[in-house]
Length: 235
Image (cartoon, rainbow, N blue to C red; front, side, top):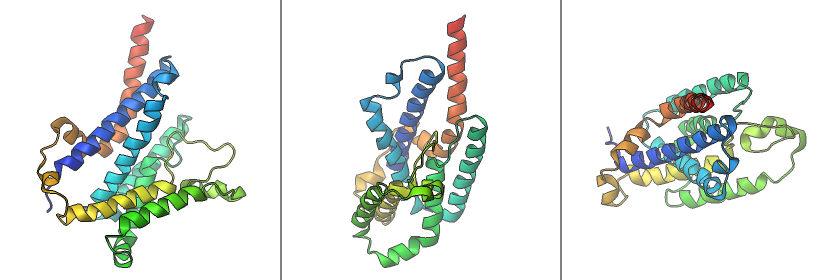
């Protein structure tokens, strides 16, 4: 059994922490009357993609250490579908959020990962996946008409489409695959020694090891805190 790498757990924990803060600011703006610049501003608009991209990339890295990406992916996608049902009843549907993306990527990699390794030499994988990601992003500019009603998980949208959280396969799947490419070098011990020896930041590392459960429960908890703040301010 491979030893956990604290640097990866800390990095993932930082991404989760920033995500929670970002979502808390959204709740304060949406439900507590805070100014919207607190949630959407040039800094957070950029950081949103940085920590979301980190989360997706690190999930790809972790796929190199997983005993079963198919099981991992099925669990993740199953949780995502439960969240779709719950958020639809709440009037804020998540149609294809980050958990849908990660679950799908894990399932795809669980089926095709070995074939990709046999087809593409490890040294070329990061570049090829990055190029495919750019091409897929450009492909989204093509108008596919009514087909977009069925292909929104890939990134095409249609008039009236909305999703409270949306991370389509194009181009984010290729961020995941770049992570799997980096994960091979890490799993094979080819990263610098300090990468494996760094002790991490305990609080962030703890958070990173529990990223999935934190993602699932954080929004109800934040909503409760926000409503508590609203109640106190109304006294």
